[in-house]
Image 1 (tube, rainbow, N blue to C red):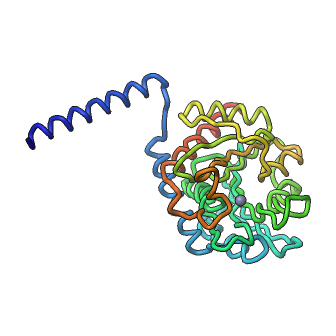
Image 2 (cartoon, rainbow, N blue to C red; image 1 turned 180 degrees about the vertical axis):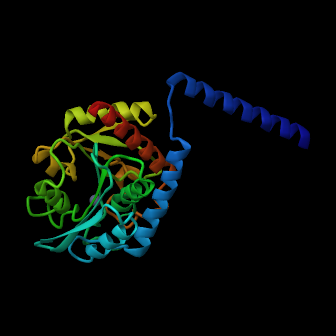
Image 3 (cartoon, protein in one colour; image 1 turned 60 degrees about the vertical axis):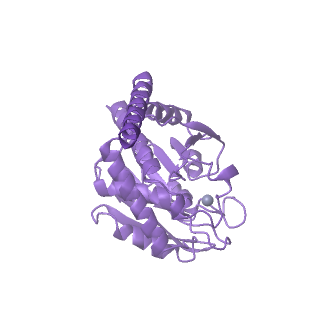
Length: 288
Ligand SMILES: [Zn+2]
């Protein structure tokens, strides 16, 4: 019986392998590479470490300590902290750039929303911060990295409330208006279902869709989203927002104490890395 059982299992495995092979041949997807998987694993480790070190990162209330934590994990060369005052207290963005001519700015917010007991923002804040830290640490992409504070609003989004770090960066003109801005948000969910904000720049959205199709990460339509791309679009940049706004049953984990590191997945972050790397490659081709 033991031998027969083994044979049956082996056949099952062969059938599964055949099925997987057929699926890949049919759609010609180039999924995450070993390099993407290494970035995904490192991104997850950074996200878990950020939540452990700074579980609460409310803009103006201790977010500066989180900014210092992020800066300390970036290569020293090309890293600077931009501190600024807001009605809610002092905030800080972290910049990192070693590229002579960056083809894009990759943006993630790192702050958490106030007033939600137990909220640590593992997916909403830490996941894409971890992804940017992993990509910046690898140092292979010709991009600038921007970690923004104060994305979450206190009461309701307005010119004075929410998106504080991205308004600051967009108005400061620290990057040329011809440099595209790609915002990444909530991309660590194990049930990975990323989409594009409809109120992003159409040409950049089209390029990101092409990148997603090339690496087997099709991008859905997230509808109009209030996120960190908005100030950049308003300031005349080409800007887009990649967001998986489908987190838990009926998005039930969003902005709750259930947004914890155990919901995150290295595989999702690897797929996000593959998407970003391909998009940057397309932007390099576009510039040439
Ligand atoms: Zn949020």
